[in-house]
Length: 77
Image (cartoon, rainbow, N blue to C red; front, side):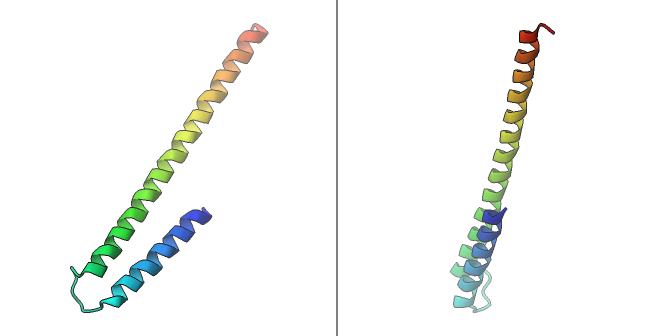
């Protein structure tokens, strides 16, 4: 969670700095495009991290189920 907050704040600071470097009002200026890219990469990274954590939870659940099955088989239940 702390990494998420740090990445978000870093993205906001960098994006704001890039936009303010060339505050001409042009929506398609290079700093604005870089800022949009930074936000896009941040969101993509957040989605990938969330999916990995969900996969990890599923893998742990499968391992727990497997161990319970082996334990019950070993006990003869």
